[in-house]
Length: 107
Image (cartoon, rainbow, N blue to C red; front, side, top):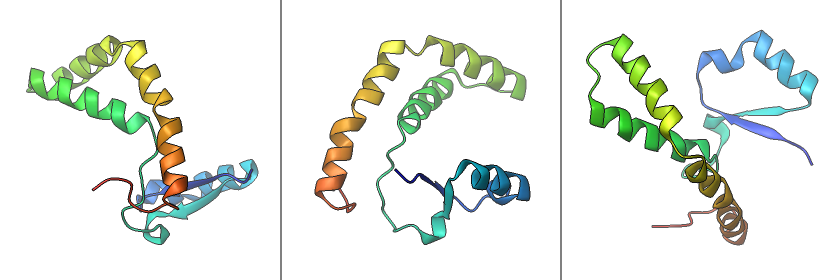
């Protein structure tokens, strides 16, 4: 299996150090600008980030320190079962993406 990572255009993703680590690991980095538009996001962490963001928003932190404390607290409160279900949901999503040949899976 040949692995590759789709990166956004953040400069930190393309520093000499990062590119060297990826090269040594045999990982190809593809800039997002070269990736098809509307490509499916198949990273389960995105769903977890969404849950965390909603929980933080509900608590309305007013300072950076509050944000950090609330984010840490809410991160630890996300049930492991939620994370497990999110990861398990990836298999059917991958099958759908393969069936649709990488095109849009939902409208």
